[in-house]
Amino acid sequence: MTASHPIRVVVVDDHPVFRIGITALLESFAGVEVAGSAATADEAVEVVLREAPDVVLMDLDLGDGSSGVDATRAILRERPDIGILVLTMLGDDQSLFASVRSGARGYLIKTASPDEVERALHAVAGGDMLLGGDVAQRAVAFLSGARSAGGTAFPELTEREREVLDLVARGADNAAIARALVLTPKTVRNYVYGIVTKLGAGDRGRLIVLAREAGFGAEG
Image (cartoon, rainbow, N blue to C red; front, side):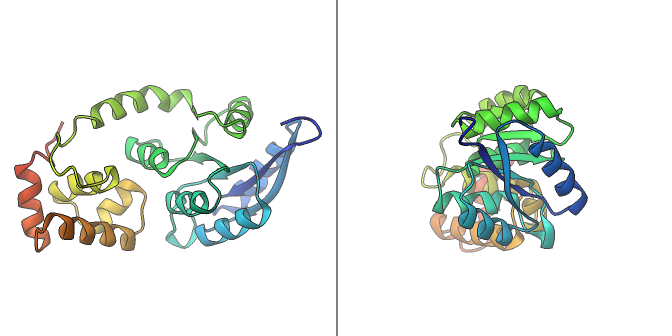
């Protein structure tokens, strides 16, 4: 972006005080303009599609129990050109992996410095991927390990379905899976139903047996 074309940003976070603070920070950056804000996934999609910003600063745990990951997917289905930069307190591997899988181009923890936020905004607006230094190393290790998880069993499943299946095989219920993958329980139910149907398992109990036999759910 040039001085005559500022980076337009929409802030998505369910905490009003944080929205005010991050908006003030963003507006202190040269060449950055805050185009709007939202507190829930539905509001985020509405505001983003209306304002068509360059970057969305996206929290993961939003108001009304909605997920920033789901909001990211919904936005990118309509506007794949918009850059999503996650800014969250969630620093665990599953949250990071879910965000990247959903199409986010950047991931920062809320302890990031103003310089890191500014640098990430410019990178994401320019089409690059940027992970905060505190998560980048773990991301590489996590994604490298994920390539071998579950072997080559059930190639008909998507990567997301394989993540869900691995947690099902560990005995996690839908609520626990939703927390781990930063999804809504309804979304998890739909994934489990789809997996059961694809694999012809019949029910969840049989699905667990099939998954464990194929190497899913192993610790380590």
